Length: 285
Ligand code: NAP
Image 1 (tube, helix red, strand yellow):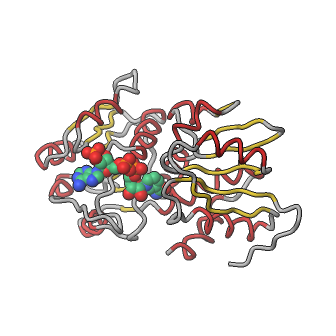
Image 2: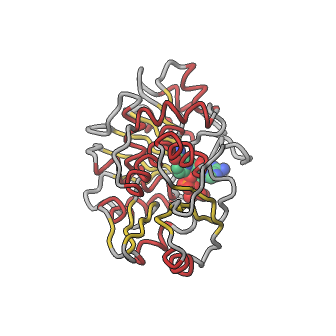
């Protein structure tokens, strides 16, 4: 892709460790070019432990803002001058804007998930959710689901202690920790109105696969299955769900929408999210 640079081009980037695999530069530069905005978006490795030093660097070298991925999201939170409600909800920041020497922290992960869920004609309100995983992504999804009125979210994880720690973040007790064994997944699937996979099982480049997907057979007709993984485009979980007749979606929509919402913060511009999704999906596949 060709990005036009001038002496006044504003700088954005994504930081992480590792980060070289990130699709954010491709996504943001594609959007910036389509929107005719004079910004460039780079990929910036920042080692674990280097968050504060990077922030000083970004301010000094005149960055307009940046996105953060693992392991910087939590470390950035206490370094912000101001944060939005979602950053405070997750105690983590994925988007930083630098204006007048101040740093403003946002988190667009949960909103991105919610918008992608809407494309499946689903909202969390009143739903009982079978949520698989208890890592960073599961935390954002689980807290967004209960904030948006989910009735109950069963957080099923191989390491149950991690699921319990995640669930302790909801004072109203709508998050419930559970195990990841077949019997538990089958029992909870029978009660679920929505399934969300937030584990890395089935992701390209990892060896892990679901050992047993028979819990999908317990789902009621029409229960949507959402997988946060976008590479491969169809995981075994999604393939089996689709064959059983369930509406199924991968994580590409979430990836695109969280980037659209971040770009709105960076540029102070309203952006047509659906148009950007149409533009980006063929670029990313
Ligand atoms: P993470 O913090 O490393 O969490 C990984 C989760 O997967 C943990 O719950 C872990 O369980 C579980 N897991 C890993 N191997 C397993 C196995 N063999 N059996 C059972 N469970 C296993 O990762 P993350 O940041 O939350 O990301 C999770 C996935 O979401 C990744 O595939 C990532 O690419 C995707 N993601 C997508 C988007 C998007 O925009 N679409 C955004 C964020 C993340 P334990 O706790 O027991 O280890």
